[in-house]
Length: 151
Length: 151
Image 1 (cartoon, each protein chain N blue to C red):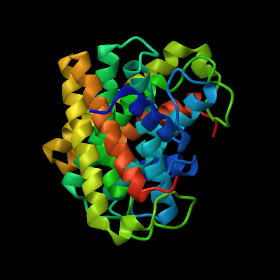
Image 2: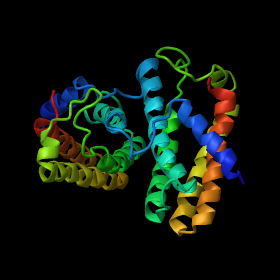
Image 3: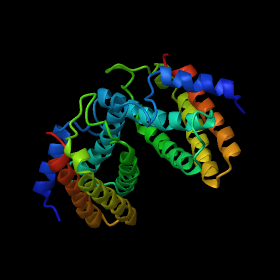
């Protein structure tokens, strides 16, 4: 077991090495945090989209793995929009997120629900059903961006 | 259901909006991808460390949720170091990752195994056991950084 003093050194080292610091932190950190989550959603989503659109062979195992990751990542967004993080580092998040929080939260819940359904359906291995649910999930991205993201 | 042409537009829109593009992509994208994953690991790790070190009250549910996320994120690193991504965008990944791939993969597996154990133990609710396993997991971060990351 690592002693507390040693642990403090290790974690300080990780932080000093450029690892982002915690969720109670400044708005800039929350902005960077949520942008990182969305970027990873995009990484997986783009790979899935290539399969859905026939640019790559449809690989059911890979599709299911990426769907599961998107579902996991979607839940990490809940802590990405704390009050005050409407400004700071460059952000495309619109003020309406904070002025109409219930509306934004509903759009986020739509995404999380459809992403969870996508993970479940993709695990089932029915490619057509998975592709249809992928489109539905992508629609929840767009619906939220239309209202809450500057493009 | 969204028609394929519509879906293409949506996904192209997401990509154009700055979302990172897929895993078969250029080295710069892989570098950015893995840095994003590590950044999210750090986000969660730092919050857990504050609880372990007594800078915040230990919240078993939050600790378990963050441990689960670190375990999920650890598995996303597997595709973060493709051949050729030793150079490109600014990276602190050392060439030894690619020249001693088996060694690097073993360190990564250590992290993934201990992070999974941390998620399981944290779910159990024994704070002392969770704290001890947190230290062990942090040790696997440091062991890999010592050999494979420029500081």
